[in-house]
Image (cartoon, rainbow, N blue to C red; front, side, top):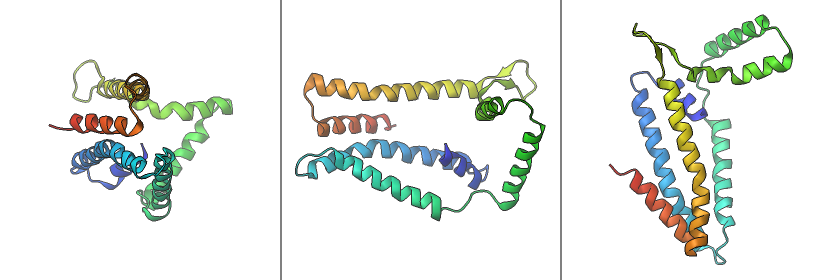
Length: 179
């Protein structure tokens, strides 16, 4: 994710874990508070128009785009950017083959970080930690993707409106973050 890459670039190795923990905590707070805000936007609408939530989300995303594109400083120094460009150009010069194959290889090559690697501690076998982490994260994404269908089931089965569903989702997300 771009945010995590930026945080890794601008943080020292000593502080990186606490910065990522803080970022993760604020992201989960946003997940818990977001449904409350959207429920209030729906309640404040004289017609109960659901589009108010999307208009507000669009405005926030436009604001964030402006901040990221024009206000936040570049995380890499000019020297690092130049060194990265030189490495990229050298790799491209050594590459041979059909341009489509080269494009596909370049597209998926960053995913090689999730493959098991030889252990750095001298023990036999492979280090599967990154592979397991990606598998767990993929499972989490699948579960969250199914949430839409659960919400639709709640609306159909119990006759809940959007405000009630958002309140329940917010309560569940909030309780998931309690110690």
